[in-house]
Image 1: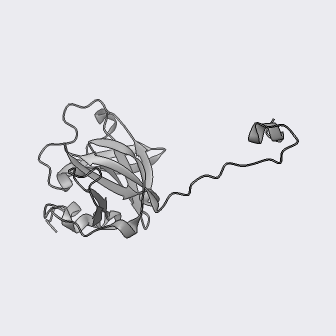
Image 2 (image 1 turned 180 degrees about the horizontal axis):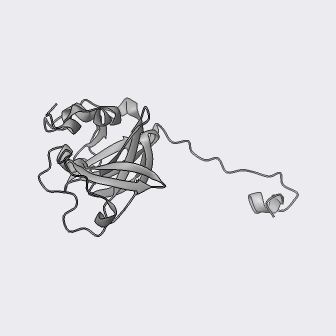
Image 3 (image 1 turned 135 degrees about the horizontal axis):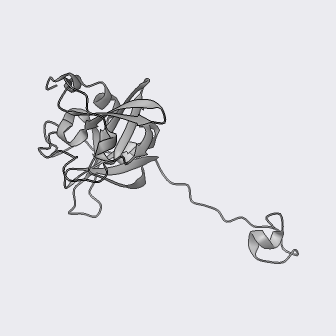
Length: 179
């Protein structure tokens, strides 16, 4: 049993229990995901309310709204606006093209919540914000929504860009303007 010293160390009761020290990761937890074919981004886990993969039929279209808005999604009884995040960032192809499910990341800031429809969820990753560099080579349509980027790892690949979820949620771009 758990209280048995043999369970803790694999040794008999003549030895004091030993616990394995676990390494403490550096930085904060981030969700990594792709928009379009090759752009990888990260969002801090503290900004993420939920990640889901509904079918396109589960997202209810809403007439007379911004073309960036795919519609609404019922998430545990709460209505969530879902946006084509790739098109928001300037991608030309819709995230809904020929898909059986659409990864949606629900982000929240100051009681405002929004679902970002993305191409693919990658993984969770520990990253240290002290290692962030100013964004370089990012398209002008993406720059206002970046906090920075981490150097390419492995070298020769694209850098991992950290998004500013507050800037995304409170952008005037949702109203149809280009800021």
